[in-house]
Amino acid sequence: MGRDKPKKPRRPRTPGEIVNALADAYRCSHCHSETGPLVEAVPGIYRLEIQHDDSCPVRRGVLPDLPDLFRAIDAA
Ligand SMILES: [Zn+2]
Image 1 (cartoon, rainbow, N blue to C red):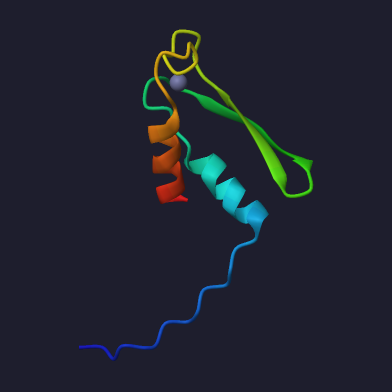
Image 2: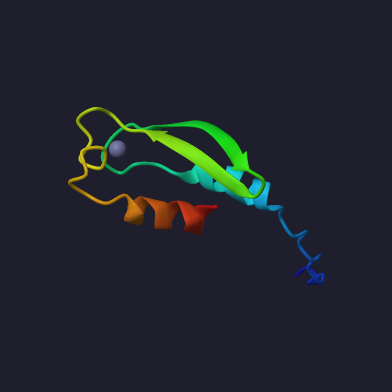
């Protein structure tokens, strides 16, 4: 039986670290997508290109990418 130590407070992540974690966690559930480079378009505004397969229904606009985005947010 170990003694429970008080947990060390976690350092708040910077917006860039959060966006990088989100980009790493994003996976399309319909294809083998790859994430393009993460670009800070203007200070504080990031742009991430998701490169879906040509036949992906998300790429064709048939299905939304929102469920995959929520999973990435939860994992990040
Ligand atoms: Zn896809």
